[in-house]
Length: 330
Image (tube, rainbow, N blue to C red; front, side, top):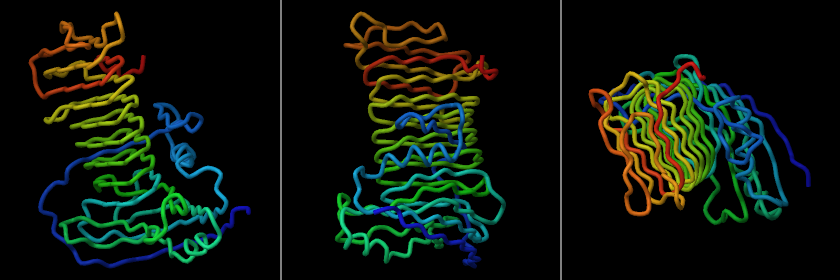
């Protein structure tokens, strides 16, 4: 059975009560990039929405017997005083980009998959149009993505969203998903993304950022501000142009971690590999900090320049590099 396709163009203007914003949220960010030709492999080249969406298709179950795809584009008015967009989803692949003040534009598709016709009929009855809802938290607006109803297991039915979401650059992002690849590009506000599985790619995020993936590569390019990133046994790359007061903390099970740090910055480095390759030194750094053996791995601890915020780099096994940031890309 081939895909069934419908199209919706929704333009909704919602008026929400103004909610005073009483404090900053946990994290800010801005940027994303993905190479769709490689499985779950973000790259610093060719950053774009289409690549992220194509790569995320791999998250859908293979050999499906029933599928449908529904293109969807919505323009929703943000309530006055919105400071944070919050998203909770079981399965999604979203790229957040810079948009116009006062509105959010959702441009993508909703995909349904099921193992049998009765389940597909149940999925087809779901109104999948995303909507905004004001929350009880000051300044926070929830993006509601309708989910699979109770009684349908993941191995029999899946509802997933793949989209680009344009937002004003100073609106923070707070995302939690069971699985999915995510990207953020050009954000001057806090960013927090937690996904059970999937790549996370950030570009030009200027603000505190916290990202976690249970199993997915993480790439942060042209970052400014605090950065906390954690993934399972996948590569983690961070190119930091400016340190925030909270510093940087990167953690991965392996196989590699690379942190490029500003040339003119002072900080306190603690870089450690729990298990280095046999006969190899697992940690290298460009700051002339001695590397010592530590159990089955290696560790480098010391102050760079006049000192400053902490830079903590943790790798389970493999190779870790702490280098100077070359802004010219040479």
